[in-house]
Figure 1 (cartoon, rainbow, N blue to C red):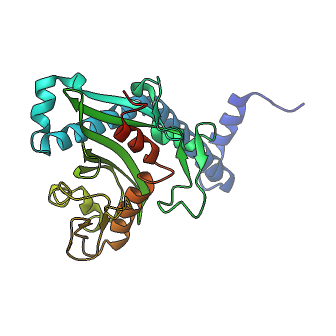
Figure 2 (figure 1 turned 180 degrees about the vertical axis):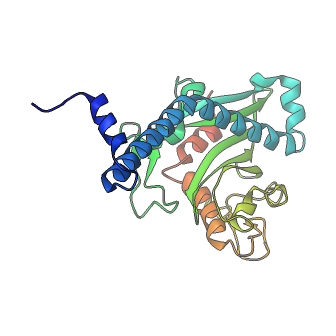
Figure 3 (figure 1 turned 180 degrees about the horizontal axis):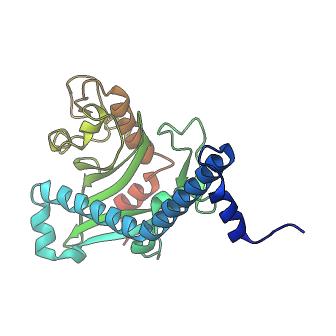
Length: 269
C-alpha cells in the first residue's frame, strides 16, 4: 500500500544526498512555490494600501494643478472645497449620473466589458481599444457661472498608457492647464512630460478654431501658434500620444456631448 503521509515523503526527500537531481528539482519547486505564495499574498494584502496611495497621489496632483493656475486657487479658497464639484457623466448622453465619484474607477471600468465600449478602429487614435461608458469630471462655478472644467484624458504612448487631467476655462476653448497623473515613458525623454516647465506651456493655449475643429497639438520643435505646444526633443511618439489623447477625448467618443451640454447649460446642473 502506498505511503500517503506527507511527513514521510518530506523525511525521505531530506534523506536524499544533496547532489541528488530529484532532491534539487523538488527543493527548487518548493522554494518557488513558497515565494509565489508570499508574493501573491503580499499583493492581495497591500492592494488597498496601494490603491489609497494612488488616489492620494492623483488628488495631490489635481490640487497642485489648481494652485498653479492664476486666480483659480483663490476662487476655490473663497468659495470652499464644495465649489469644485466632481460628477460622473455618461459619455453616451453627456449628462450627469447619480454615481458617487468616490466609488468610481475609470481605469477599472474601461477594462470591464459590462461598463465599457469597444472603440471602432478608425476612431481609436489614442490606441486604447476600449473606453469606459462613464467618466468623472471636475467643475468649478462662481456665482453660477462656469469657470473651470477638468477632464480625464488618456492615450497609449511610446512605453505606457499616459493619463492626464486637461483643464479648460469657462469658455471651454482656452486651456487652463495640463497635469500628467500617470506615465511610464522613457526617463529623460518622454517622461519629461511630467516636468513643471513643460506643463507650464499649456495655460492659454486654444483648443479649437472658429469652425469648432480640435486643432491643439504637441508639435516637433517650437510652437508657432496658440494651437501648438512645444514638443520634447527625442520624444515625438510621447508628444503624439498627448495630441491623440486630446483629439480623442474631446471628440465624438469622448466628452463632446458633455461639453455641448455645458455650453447649453443642460444636463449637468
